[in-house]
Image 1 (cartoon, one colour):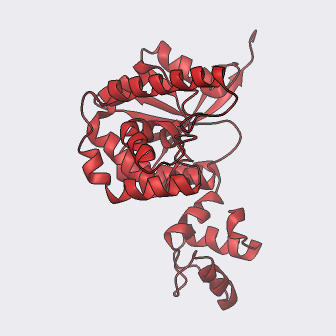
Image 2: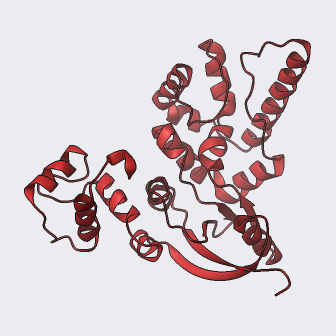
Length: 285
């Protein structure tokens, strides 16, 4: 919301408008919102305006408008509420991973990593990180080529994609480590995937989400890497029939980046999202 630099009057109108389409305000407020691409000429909310308006609401209202089920649960105290919920889900024999923004930053590029690597070599571009959120000239060039050829690239994703890319990343990281031990200079393809997930994670993602949902994830992130590298839910629960995401909250509400990305996850990727408000049970109680 801060990026839009809106006044209290603008915020009040947006908040009213999301729940009451007939809400009115003065002309100067509408003009100011139009300049920020939050309103149309007739005072209705744009897509960005709706997202900003939702960000102003309490958590329960946010979830209600977005079609996200919300529940409150009590869990024992752990280093983080996300860890507590993952452990609780696993006790119920559910395949749960704590991922947060991993989908935008790592999962999407992982399944086309061999293509990204080849582009970096062909374009002689440094690949300092596979994070799609990095905004540099080399990444802009690579991302533009990916956008222009995304459908043909996605058509090459198959059952061996996960294994092939994991082996390539492992090889490149090993090579980087050796070069850094020999020299203080950084290798052109150094520094990526240092916190790479285990092989089983990517295998499970591919197995339980399926190739079509993986393609939808990649399409979304590639469409706007800087925007869709953020706002992903905290946890994914994998099930062949009903995979879903879980967003964990304690005292805060959904942030603007979460509202934008989660809306796309629900509508374009077609994976449901649940929100869990965690109350902590202190050990010994």
